[in-house]
Each structure stands twice: as C-alpha cells, then as structure tokens.
Amino acid sequence: MTMQPLDASWLRGEYAEEFYSFIYIRAAPEQVVARLGGRWEDFTPGPFPDDPDDHPVCESFGVAAIGDWTFVFDPGWLGTREDVITGLSEGTRLVSQAVLAIKGLDYFYWCEDGEIRFAWGDEDNHFEQTSDELADTMAEIYSLYPSRLDFHEGPAFLLVEHLTGIRVTERLLKGSTFMWGVVPESAAP
Image 1 (cartoon, rainbow, N blue to C red):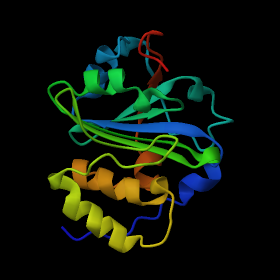
Image 2 (image 1 turned 180 degrees about the vertical axis):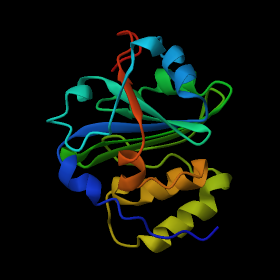
Image 3 (image 1 turned 60 degrees about the vertical axis):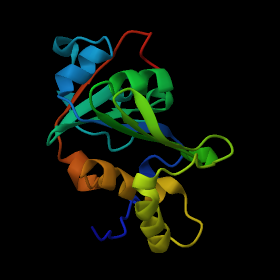
C-alpha cells in the first residue's frame, strides 16, 4: 500500500489547546460501551463537536460505528490509560492516539488481544522499539514527513490508517452519527 500524506490541520484550530483521545476498536459500539461499564440506553445521539469548549457533550465521550470498527472520541485521558485500552482490546484490535496539543505531547498505542504491541509518546516523546510489522510503514511515514512535525498532525493518522483501514478526515467524523454518554468512574479518565 502506498501512503498519501494526510492533512490533519483541521484539528489544529478547533483543538489547538485541548487534550483528546481518538480510540479505534474492532467491535460494535454497544460492546465498547458495555466493556467500559456503561449502559447503551443511557447514551444519546449527537454530532462530532465543532469546538470542544462550546459543545456540552464534551463532558462525556462519543462512540460511532465506522465499518467494523467503533471510533471513540474522548475529551480526556482514556486513550492513554493502559489498563483501559488493554482491557478493551481483549479478543480484538485497538488503536489509540491522543494529544495534549498545548504541550505538544503525542501518545499512540496499538493493542492486540489485551497486549500492547506498539507504544509511542510520553513526556520524552520516544518510540518504544518498532515491531517488524511496522518497520516498513514507519519508514514510509518518515519519507512523507521528513521535517519535524507533531505526530498528531499527520503521521499518527497514517499509522491509524495502516492498522485499521480507516482514513480519518474531518468529513468522516463530522458526517458520522455519534452516541454520547458517560461510563463509571473506574473506567473514565
């Protein structure tokens, strides 16, 4: 597969100083909510937020079906909690990307069946050892983005696309129907 650069600049304006997690799980939205301890019937439909500061649902998180995957938007740390993401990935694949934009911190996880296969980011922004499965993909990403670029401004989305088959765009997210709700404190950030 030949990758094409992805423009994620639409996130810069709306989420420029925010922290958010995008989580992709190969499971139905109802299953994801149940695994987090939530009740599907307590979730209500709503759009993807244009501005997280002005959107009332941003006190909760949203789930949307994208093909065989569930996309989770969390306005917090859920996608960086290893206990949560490894639990959610049991029996399936999970990819999580998160950013604290104001500090330029990026986080990325790929989990398979309860095990972290690849992790990137922390305060030191370092890669853990790249698995053989991702070596060629990472080389291709670096060739598309040779200059210093925040991981969340394109490279992370290409890695998501490679691992999930989902090309995340503003149009995709804003055109999807989300269900918004909360989960018990034990799973919530």
